[in-house]
Amino acid sequence: MAEQIQKKLQGELEKYQQLQKDLSRAVAARQKLEAQLTENNIVKEELELLDATNTIFKLMGPVLVKQEMEEAKGTVGKRLEYITGEIKRYEQQMQELERRSEQQRETLGRLQQELQRGQGKG
Amino acid sequence: MKLNQLEFVNRKKVESDYEALQERLRTLPNKLSYDIMVPFGPLAFMPGKLVHTNEVTVLLGDNWFSKCSAKQAVELIEHRKKHVRKVLDDLQKVMKNFESRAEFTDLQKMSDVSFGVFLVNCFSNCVLFFCYTGKYRTAHKPHSKPKLSNVFEVDFPANGSDTKSMGHFQSEEELWAHLEELERQEELLGELDRMPNTAETNGEDTSSSEEEKEDKRTDLNGMYRAEDCITQGNFHKEVTNSDLFGGQVNGSTYYHSDDEDDIDVGDNSVPTIFFSHTVEPKRVRINTGKNTTLKFSEKKEEANRKRKNSSGNGHATPELPNIKTPADIYRFFVDVVNGEYVPRKSILKSRSRENSVCSNTSDNSAAEFDDRQGVQRSISCDEATQSDNSESILEEEEEEEEEGQQQLPKKLLPSSGTTEAFSGTVIEKEPLSPSLIPHPVIAHPILPTILERKSEEVLSKASEETPKRISKFKAARMQQPS
Image (cartoon, each protein chain N blue to C red):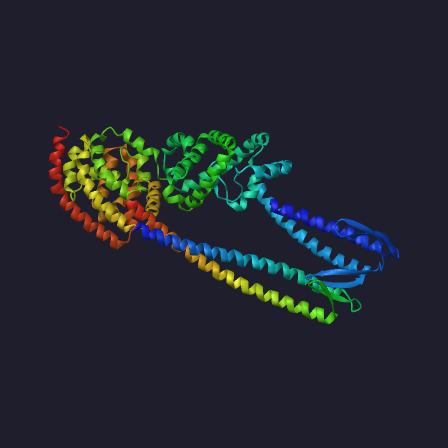
């Protein structure tokens, strides 16, 4: 009886660890996205500061490609939206993962209690 | 907090860099061209000229560049500096928050003075001093680690340097005193206060408790130890502090386990920790003068008890003579009670033996107890809750206990009458009775009504059987003392 419980406990524990890993990965990705978000915001502001006379370049690999001001502004704006969307998605994912890990924790606690009871009796 | 400091420093550096850059940009267009040494690969330089001094290609971020005049570049830099300053301000606000919390513990003053030293020491020393997490219980364990989040903060005051540590001791002691007071207040409402014997045991446990911390019981002892410190002053703490510093490495390992224990125990602390006394049972055995027979009977029941009780030991031990487990207590008292109560005819009969030895009835009552205990345990899911209940009840005065016991008698026949009997007959037992009775008694009121009925039925059955048993046992017992 105790062995069964222990096996179950092991299984649940692994699942919980997996959930935790996923959660940490999601958190890291979200942090990266946040950094990109701030950066793009700065770029947007600086583009505002510049006027049309300057040329704008975009670095694509080893090449600096010339861009139009309007084009650049549009691209940056779109990127910003994309990043915010990604962040929201990750947020939802994180909440889901947290909920599931909470459930796992409960089951783990229950199993542990059962195990202890079983061990106590035996 | 340390992290914040580091970030702060970084940001400052960035800002200063920007300032330098601005200066450079301002002076750059002064000349049409500059003669410079151009880096040529990683190892060489080449003489060259810097032309188009007014044209600057600026990185806007995220792989975006813009070619602009030097003045415009300066403007861009200004804009970026604004951003950095904003981040700096946020960091400062966070720092202030931390500082305000640190001041609460009076440690910040120390840390400010020797911050640099502490930083070094903090990394080297694993011993962490509690800070302001508010988890007094964990803090009580001498130098138990607070939560990880507080690690950084904790490091400041803590310790590591020898000379500093001494100074810290004093401040730490003050903090300990403060913390202890707070904890004491907390626990006044809680269960610790109920255990008068803890002080005695604590003295014994102080040295060994640290080592035993793996067990919850030992943790409890440690808790008690903390209590003792409060009562006895900071002597123990000092001792422990010295021990801690002496064996920092070991201490760290201790504390790791402590932390884990603390974390676990902390959650369960109230119910189970207080009661498990590993030491107390020993004393209990010693105390009982009457115990000879009880011991005998107890041995029989020990097997049962061990199975049933893990937490129960804590309750009964300190106050009850010879009672290692609540079951014992119950038996012990029940015997007395039983004598008075009719439902347990055995009790009546045993009464005569009360004075002589409880053991006579112990066997009889033991069986009853076992039944009851079995019922109780089967019913109660959490020993902790029981213990909590018992503890809470323990705090209450005898009157309450009597009431509780009276309630129980409905479920379990003997209790109410027995309690009164105890108070009247034996003064010594008073402390015991509350501790003894509440444990089994408490379980019942808490248990759902259905369970109570079941217990009643069981008890009634047991009681019916007891007379028969008693007669047999009586004979045996009668022979024993004689």
